[in-house]
Image 1 (cartoon, rainbow, N blue to C red):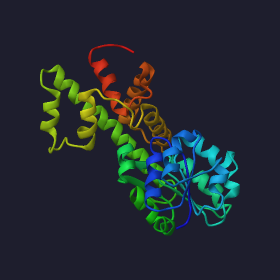
Image 2 (tube, one colour):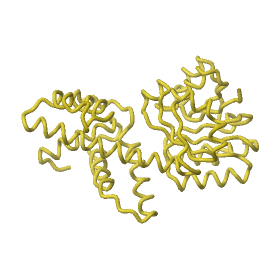
Image 3 (cartoon, rainbow, N blue to C red):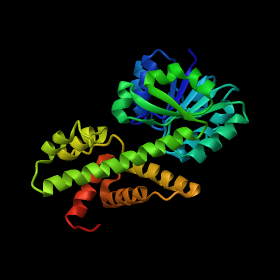
Image 4 (spheres, rainbow, N blue to C red):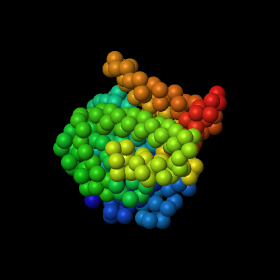
Length: 292
């Protein structure tokens, strides 16, 4: 098996890298905070002192960091790109945007390095279970070559050329955000109308209103358990990217604009690092006629 360099071992990256280690891949990891990588080192991964050291000699390089600026820094600012051999495959699993993916692919291509943008959905549970939905943009042959790597982390689907994976993820995040808002409003309406929100949620399961958001995040809302899986901050980042790309494409998306504003309001009232299902709190507050 070719060695994999995995850069970024945070909430999502650590369990994803752990799945690769468990599958038998030789994995070298780097993270800004070494402590977050310690469990991986105990499981057999090798530590690198920086991104450039991590990628040297690797056949596959995976980046799973916080945002586009962080990807830019670890690939190009750190000198890592200069250590990549021709034929290496860089797989960016960070959620960024289609223009960022295309720019990075073009710059790496000039060095003979192949590139795939492959953001994911499924949260920390999916990362730990190896059941992530992986949305891949890139050459068919390259993505096929990566099949064993992706299989350790989840289920991959090629959605088009470079940049398409990021576009698919933006579509995913739009659906998730709007659905979280709809479930939150439904549960607030049920409670204010005198029904038991938990019973309403159970009654809706199996019908047309059923969804993973209703099942998992609906339960979070009822339990008022907003410990972060996917944070409000990260979801805003993706909604901002979706809004920016919609503007480039000349597309007006009213639901995106509305739910993005609601997430902004939640962030401004201290919800930045809560789980994105905490949008319930903002909708609950607005339902009570309270202003930010």
